[in-house]
Image (cartoon, helix red, strand yellow):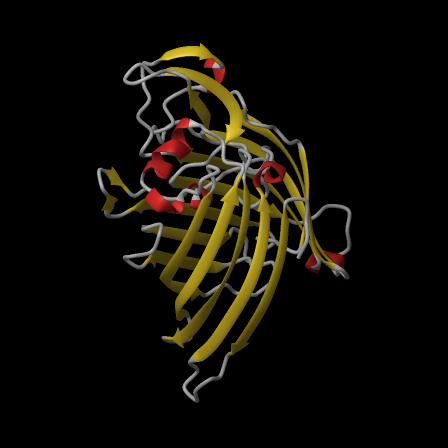
Length: 343
């Protein structure tokens, strides 16, 4: 896969019937190059490779569990000297390279649970989908951290024929470090941060731009002097919510409606950094970008309309949206187009 900000090569194999009782076995080998600035994130480059092994366990017709173990090597360069990343680097010791980059070797394990009772695989109108996941690097990895996420989608039919349905979506996520390296506690690595903005999280905002921004500290000792910026850095916690009214597409035939879905929606999202502690400090410049990034009530919201089309080349999604609440430094995006993914 190649796009504006990423080059990825993955060899992935999964046997869904590794055993007669439905246990699956899969493996993955990957190489990835990521340019953060091209993804609307504060600048850094990340070259990584690794491998993982995954087992799947069906519990019943609705519930499924996955368990995996893996290894990842990362070489990260062009790191900026902003306050949030400096706290993380202080805990990384010998993993920080002589030129100020970062080189880490991490071994991790993860477990996830999925429950799916949607009434259809494409354009569902009733039912519920839930997924919870937890991942953690093992003690002794260069970066010691954990990360958890829960996603839910609920479709509620409003008419007998399911012409009108209500879709409610939500996401909660949190991650942090565990243990310490000398006098510095481990933190969630910046490359694992949560972000908001874009079709899958918060429409009306450009991808990854709605959330905490990089703060540069040009002070000395215990006298911080802050410089604000509009560079997105994400946070270690996220909460998303969306309400969407699905209705029959006007001016199209009944046969075509099976391939087209229209809706109006309201999205809301909050991304915050529970480790952010710079408050009441002297600000040299960029005051408009600086606020308490540890406060989860600093949310963004938007409203709009969307059209999804099951085209011959795959699912296409068009949306028009406008922010209701935003902050300085957030990039607004009125029109979005997505291929290959729907709700």
